Image (cartoon, rainbow, N blue to C red; front, side, top):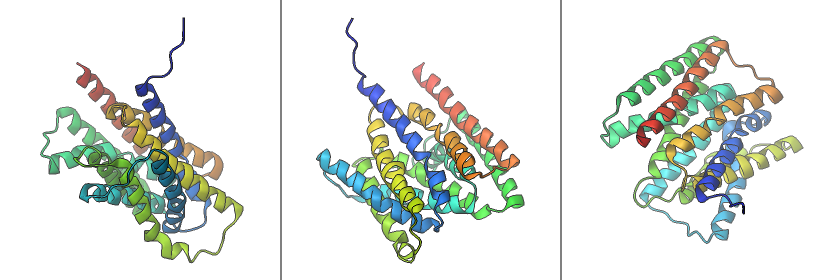
Length: 284
């Protein structure tokens, strides 16, 4: 019996999975670079622009720009900047888990701007995630990093904006990514030009961040979301807030506060559980 190749849906799911793994490299690489967050973000996005630009050329995808694409670019830039800066001000675990609140912000933004009536499951998920977030801020009162936690939470809001704008008329995700990366470069460029230390570890980390954690990851996510349902994509992306702090703990020896760890479990279980239950409901 002849073995059939992978379907488009399976390829899309694989792309989302690989993207999530690549995203998880961010915490470790940012931690080992002794620059400020804005400088790191500017440098990595210079490399990312080469990757995304190369993809646009190879696929003959015309770069577009309109108000929705620009708004999406601002959300991409906000996510990039806030994530980089937050990683320098709080633990990698706190940063990525607080950013993982994005699906909850999607629900809240839908209520405010699109007047979408929330279901009981939506409200329960929001309450549980917000309860988990409280643990992070209780922990930060003891260990510091309050500003980093706030910026990480805002990163989750910005990331939610990216997902919402993908579904709007005249949206073009890959164009938003390109313009968002370009804006990110200029936001931190003045600080980047002041850097004087360029060790091999720094340069390699910048290339890994730009080429893989930002550039290739965003390209794969854009490809994957074409055939992968949002619920499935959210579940697969759940590997990121687990793998990210594990890499940092293993190679950078950064400990996670016990109270924040409880909050992380609550947030991850709530978001993943919400997506599983919502997926079962939509199938019925």
